[in-house]
Length: 226
Image (cartoon, rainbow, N blue to C red):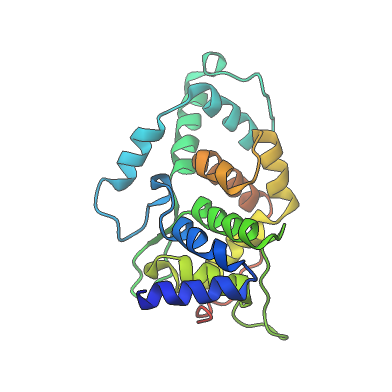
């Protein structure tokens, strides 16, 4: 077994995941659905290909616009939008589909973190370990995130994302918040890993809206716990 997979298997065992479930769980974490695979290391055209495969749902874009404006309307449709509203709806749809761009690398280059991918990983870990909530902790007085589930999450992440522990912790915190639950309910989303895999774009929107309406307190960037 390659060293990186051995480290992941050990981290999964530390989460209390049954031995027979570890290989399948590791496989799901290291080979997520293609719709999640957008990062700064991907070749040109990856994000465009994902956009093409997802397509554009005009009526969903109309309902998303109404939600974003604080006026949820499950009956909203593209036909009833004005020309300017259609432009705003399309911009919002495109921003929801793409991952977050965060200028937090030492060189100042943007790193793309897909919040739906982080949510998918946390749900896979929760389901495999039999826990309803993804758990992580910090030392007393502050410090880098840690704990068994956190270490498993970090081991599962692509290498270029592991240095962004604080941003990842922020996304996890948002997906455990009442605001996120509210947006999921409005979008008609369930929150199993299979649901995230089936509707990653919509989950990106729910996470984005939850972050905007109640942004978590920023912390000083800390290195990931090995």
